[in-house]
Length: 247
Image (tube, rainbow, N blue to C red; front, top):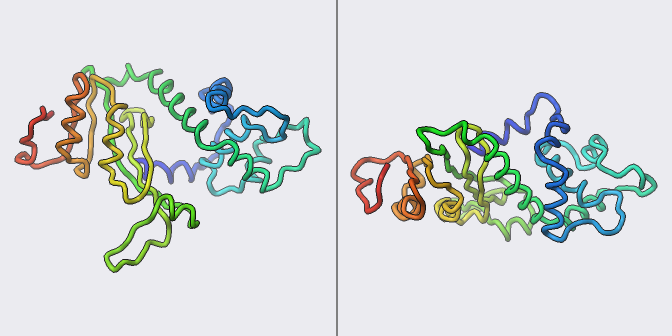
């Protein structure tokens, strides 16, 4: 699911209308994300933290374009400080100062708001429809990425050419909005990530899994730690004879 959607974003035939994104991602949210994580810019910079947030979002969408190209084409640098040059090292340092916490805060805020906006229109017999699926992402080959995420090791003990991250996403089926996600080391199983996502599944819901998530513990926890929560997973009928209620 997520792995299928990423190429579609990268190969957008027309440039993204940033004004539309601004309508759904208000400036106030960006400010709140920075304040909540003590990342608001105090001293004057030509590329303050607020602009760096938009830079990171743009880099995720226009992955084939350089940082300088995005800064220039989107006018992210403040014009009143035009006498200050923005170098490649300056943008790198700005992203490092920002960190990941404001983006994580912004992800959860936007996810809750966007889903709540119209989820009532997409109920199936009174149930929210969700899907959980896993994916792997190839990362830039660096010592830090290899140490932090690891990579696939083949039967002949050959290590993959790139470090890889494993992730699991929880998505609303009708709108394809991601409700929550977990990413981590390649050697952490999808089922482990799935357990931590169960708390994000709402009551009165039906969640669809693929056969890789056929785990009695996972599915029983989903059903028993909520109200009217159901699941659908491909399985042969004898394997479904377990202690939890099976939908």
